[in-house]
Length: 266
Image 1 (tube, rainbow, N blue to C red):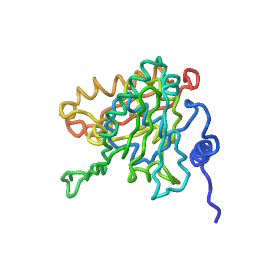
Image 2 (cartoon, rainbow, N blue to C red):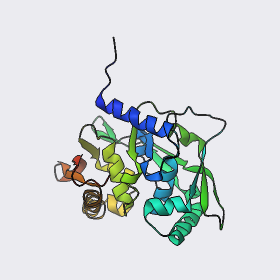
Image 3 (cartoon, rainbow, N blue to C red):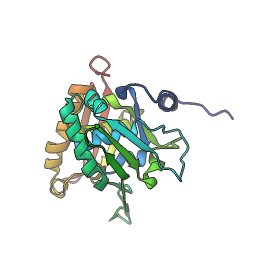
Image 4 (cartoon, one colour):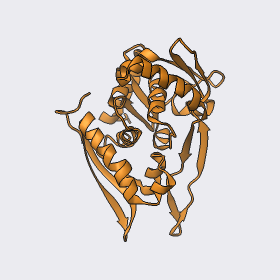
């Protein structure tokens, strides 16, 4: 029996083919592709670090088979960073230098989705790994090179299913890492136009602080509402959301969304 290809599958394959066939295209036109597990993980990055890491991810051919003996390395220049993120060269140099100091110590936190057994919550499993095993910055030359952590590569290369893709230019102008993370979490379900995350999973994906996790009003005020406003104002998203409650307690968040073709910048 022939396998029917859906529009979502066709669009995803087109995105992957675009990455594979034109690796030297302008930075903003590159696609960021990563596994769904990495998409929903806690990334532990500041906005400047997120920009650099995702610019580097956009240079990886996500369809290329993994070479276990030679993890890839990716170079980002200050000129690329300045042009894509809309900052001056001095800021680009400073942020690349800062990234070289800090990205090595940043970790990805993978987690199992929250669930229950016999009506009781089960503590989700956690896996922590670095983004990179080595990072180089050459003072005065204006570039940084990331040597990817070997165990992370399966989330960036050899991807055939269960992945999320979006163009770098959709996110690089954002001024909040929360907005960028929400963009990724919603794009994962772009074909359905809605997404629902438990409050625990959402907080983990957003790297929410312990204080924010204990106070839903803080998550709404500091994370959800500003992130939605920036995506709507800068990237033409139409987003509505509502808390899903069990009694008086918020147990999940439901988002309904689409892109407004009349106002989207990209």
